Image (cartoon, rainbow, N blue to C red; front, side):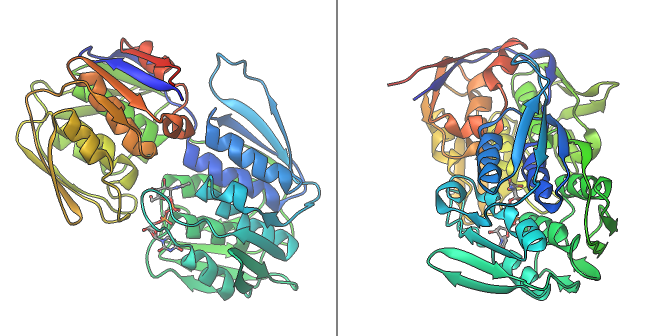
Length: 427
Ligand code: UD1
């Protein structure tokens, strides 16, 4: 298994390109199921999760063609054509690898009147049920049965528009319901909908496909169902979590990076958190610039929350950065119950962190030391890379398949801005 070896202590400097957003791509790809015409997605990142999703769509009968970019270029172009859906079953073998597979449920049901999707089961960061997705689809008239580990959903006469009020904010449930509602009979209102920029991206793509959606970017989405949608070409938004992760890397090493393609307007309260921690983010013509305001990093308090609050997907990377801040920090995780798996690994590098309930108390230390560490999930893995870039000596991160799920050409991008980092084959 491959490992990443980092010799820390080099301030990062230069321009680093930001790829298309993984989480936007994973909701735009299933949208292709909603029409028999081609959907062309530009700026698609080169990631293991995209390949897994391609495989899933392919076995539903969606044809996929990749064109354009050579291996050394960023941003692939993929055309997805769901001329005829040949299977409405999403099997356990694929769904267990990637929870986002559950996003085929709404589109399959809306297009074909039936869908059978494996229950995703737990994952490293928590139990992550899909009850909100299922209750929402029931409100649109679907009959749902759980049998032998599968969700069997049926709406033989089509879905019917309704008012769906989510009891709490869920990104995935909002995406599934939004896609399903575009082909339902009549009007659907989604209340307490998630407002993440990836949902705005999905809504804009659906609009380009002919969907009628009002309230984009708000917690109340109003959708007038159509009998059919048509093809479109759409560019995937830049990855705000990738941008935030590299901003942490620039800040912890005392460097200065221009994140090319990054969009400050999608970062929500992450910008304020950086500001309080002593890191300036400024908009440039090509993206955004990150550098410390001068002096050291400062301890802060952050609590994860749905957008525009502080994203749970940035918690681990901020924690790594704050291990070297002056003073104490408190990070409180409110979205997932088991998202502190990076804590013992960071502690092995000399970080001072105590977890009590949902909060992690970080006392800044003078320096971190390189150590062999293990990646446990995608964002936790990135926090170890960030810590390794600033640590004294050598850090070896193993189980890096987690990183390959969500960070396109990580070591290549970091090498180009001065990091001493390489990938090595492991035993
Ligand atoms: C998406 C993102 C993930 C991010 C998360 C929160 C993708 C592919 N993944 O995940 O990176 O960390 O949003 O920003 O876009 N819940 C239920 N029942 C449900 C649905 C969710 O209890 O039916 C709970 C979850 O367990 C979690 C919380 O609600 O505690 C939020 O989850 P949700 O917003 O749905 O996250 P995902 O869509 O799975």
